[in-house]
Amino acid sequence: MAEAVRNTAEGLDAELVEAALDAARAGDAARVEALLEPVHPADVADLLEQVSETDRDALLAMGSAVIDGEVLSEISDAIREEVLDALPDDVVADALRELDSDDLVDIVEDLEAEDQGRLLGA
Image 1 (cartoon, rainbow, N blue to C red):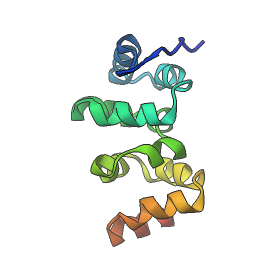
Image 2: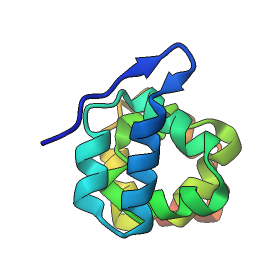
Image 3: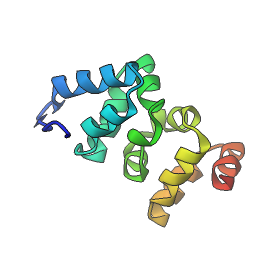
Image 4: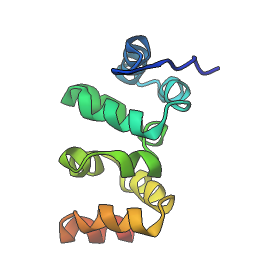
């Protein structure tokens, strides 16, 4: 059962963030998914933007437990390419399929041609 998510003006609840990071570090994708499923995609994107690169990598290793189309569209341009590169092509392809065409275009147009072809081919 997913824990209750408490959002504050400053962002996500610190206990939720720590629990999600602990689960990601332990490789527990089911726990990460249960914790983040009720969280708004913009807040998941903020979480990915605000944690250390090591913690971001641990979260991204959970793949679709963390990333879906809505989260992908909310991630800032500053880390989007890093996120896309860290994820397996099938996870990115599934996330891209969920997007409206305008969101898809916004994401794909910012990628290098090689990455565009690789991801759209997946």
